Image (cartoon, rainbow, N blue to C red):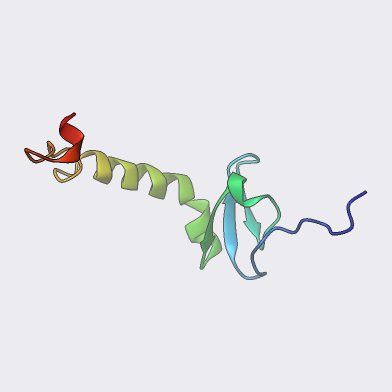
Length: 77
């Protein structure tokens, strides 16, 4: 039995979206590796997956993201 219980980090009043349980949580209930957040409101946490999809789409369509490396850069190997 461990001497110290491993605690999740966060504070009550912060909202999270648990990726494993697919639910909104107030304060830390699940490990950080399984959640998005913190969010300021429950509504923001409820829309976490939609927000992630929108951001991924923005990044995929960002012209700077898909630029070819400049000539002579270390990535030219």
